[in-house]
Length: 398
Image (tube, rainbow, N blue to C red; front, side, top):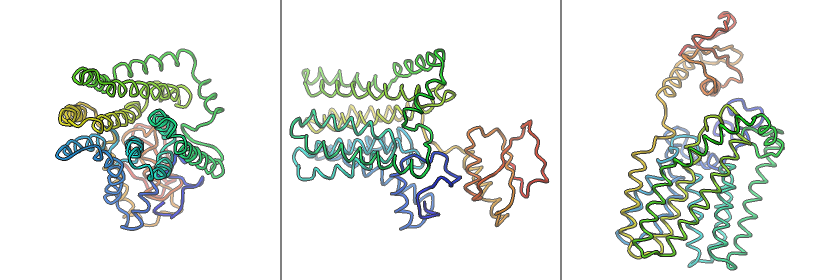
């Protein structure tokens, strides 16, 4: 977008998943056009976007207790995908939480209700799975405010559906076909039929094991049980536990169905990106539950200490997601260095020889981006397929 000043089209060769919504990219594009392009500047912009959503958390804190918001924001920023990656899973959680917090804020500030419409639009246009989180939040608001929620929840639902359908129309008209995780009954049926009962059974067992060993949610519910008895079996805590359990259950069910109906077999068999997906709902549930409890209790010290400790334990125990691998940096430096030597490579044939086979073609696409080439031949050192070096103008070895 920063290079061409337009949305990607079907002819773009450096982007594989062309049908993904791009709301966060629009924000980064706007910042990049204003302050100039560099990875450092876009990292700061992405962090600003994430923090702007997390900032809502401070509304529930009073006086000196504001200090408890800091570990929660750090947790939201670093528990799942990091701000310097292109993943939007943490943004998804933060945006959904911001809407939840704003719904609670509206009880005393009803005139600000229409601000939820652009918030829901942003959430749905971040990622397709934002649709599920949007539905969760609207249902919660209906139960929370009952008849008073009818008008606003209807407007929000229309905003959600309009946003989703408008992007679907754009994808259909621009690309004709959809990409990975496409939302299509025909595609779901085709993907499911590619998996026999043995494969479905393996995926089901792996998924059940992953859910039952979800240490974060186990810790979260243990904390709620302890607080429930400390607070003399307060209904508010019981309500938080029930809602959290229901939301987590439906989200897990949706995730399971995605592995069966949408995820390619070779990825579903090892639950590809499970940690990234499940941490999305972890952040939303954790921040929403804590926000609600802090908003409803004057004595915030105990809650703040317990959940701050939980944040620290989580960040220490959890395996990081979205860390920039040293190889990524090394390979990019090689490409940048070679490009500086080559100059104009239009019309030239380039062969890139990697240390190991690039099955995902991640590094190959990196080369296509750096050299602005629609096609680059890739190989690896132990490749049985032989290439005639004379057929290439440039050969780059990792």
